Image (cartoon, rainbow, N blue to C red; front, side):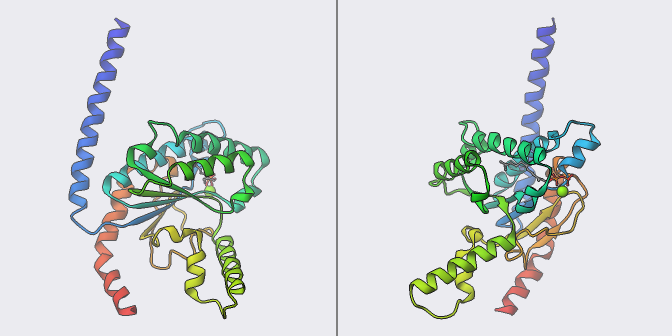
Length: 271
Ligand code: FPP
Ligand code: MG
């Protein structure tokens, strides 16, 4: 009897999921009649506050944050967004308590490895994964896993996922300036131009983000994509990152569409 009830519940869940999936795809059809952003960036803030709010043990907030990220990626790629960038771990995050850094890095290692699983979202959507940041600051294990995923997905071209780890914007800019200097010196050329720095930015694999979403109601950029967000629309829903969902994404895109023609005209005037 218990088995039969369990079987029935599984069946009902599957039907509900299919209905949700169908209604979501209908909604996306309607939304994609308007202009769609090409690149969305996320600052996944509020994971520890979520754990506290839900009375969960330390670290559970970040695990829930990873699940929220997987759902968000699914929505973005279903909708036809080409690039998603996430701030997964900043250089400043290394200053957190050693136990917390260790547990975050363990989680990162486990989740990076899981991206290579056959049933992972990476295979489902043909995602090319980039890890952006000062990877030398990571442990050998985490760096090796990140490099393996980058290599394994290098031939994918449908959509891109840029995971910023051991990243901050000022570090990215300094590294790009250094590389530009080295190239100029090697080729005995003159002063550095804007284009040299842009070419050497790690984020140059994608166009600048159209929208930057920071969860948990915070409105700071926290040294994230400072070079690339000059024209991005900022959106900061009150939801903590693990609570972020479809409605927040839809709201951000509708706002983008509302002001799209204004921004396009402004860009053309600046040209
Ligand atoms: C900020 O929340 C979030 C982080 C420091 C890490 C987020 C990382 C994940 C969700 C896992 C990502 C993994 C991969 C492989 C992409 P917080 O710790 O600052 O929380 P608070 O604002 O409530 O203190
Ligand atoms: Mg935070």
